Image (cartoon, rainbow over all chains, first blue to last red; front, top):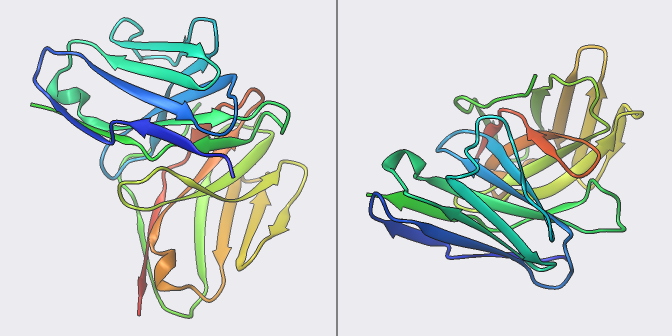
Length: 117
Length: 111
């Protein structure tokens, strides 16, 4: 089956620094990737839709200058949390859709636990 | 509007019993609905899906029911096992792949 990886799985950073999270589709090409944020005991909240070679589409309330998304290739999308603060601590999950199998098919990465101290 | 999760409701069942997990959705324009299972510290895992023009779909040990009149979705798990313990989310799917997740339910299976 389709595999999506994320790196790192866990990261701790100091307040004010930036951290980059990578999302890779390992055995398929993904024209579209999605980034979600999940706080403890809560649901997944879609942050943005990332399309290869174009600007990401952000959901209402998500700051595009704070959460920088780059989808430079068909197998890699990155999320950079800039000037991180403790309230940005969360579980960040990406997913990728497979073109040609129906636009509803998505495969999720294992998530990245970000802790900002 | 969009479904937003606050705090997860919990469902506790005995091993071997059937489980029913419910979900209310908010958007009538949804084309597709999907149930995901999420274990602690992991990403969501696909369980079963159903198109909006269907009212029931069965998989292996799982059944999804859709009632569009009241915007309600349910997941039935037969003969629940300890390995089924996880958080279950329903999601509304739209063209282009966008997913809006429901609140989620934490299922706990007692051996």
